[in-house]
Image (cartoon, rainbow, N blue to C red):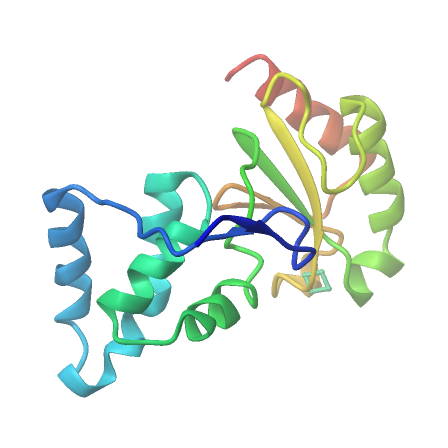
Length: 178
Ligand code: FES
């Protein structure tokens, strides 16, 4: 079947192609799979999505097709999990993926100013990546750190009790490659 661009995310291109992973990566996936009962393969979906994202840079259609076959699931089962969690990216992101929490506590305590400041400094809008591929900024739902709002996640690290000054120091550090 030919690739079909859809407006699902404006980024995903659907195909029947299946990702080809090396034997080592398939073995790593099997190691996750055996942690769960044989009739509960679906339970391995989240760790396997992390493997696909690491290997392919984001959750792409071919990777989803692979997981559907690997876990005996419908493709839609895989998509509905992948698209539910903001930790999975449906498109390539920069080296530093800045995910700013936009939910109530963070929003009340300054998220709009924080996001605006980050975007102004980087010259992009939320959802965009800088031309040098270093930074992507995304506004996401609650990251479970409401008591230290406003906050954001970069990679796997949380940055909390944000102020404009803190954000500036952080961006300077990341830009300097430290
Ligand atoms: S509202 Fe921002 S972490 Fe919960």
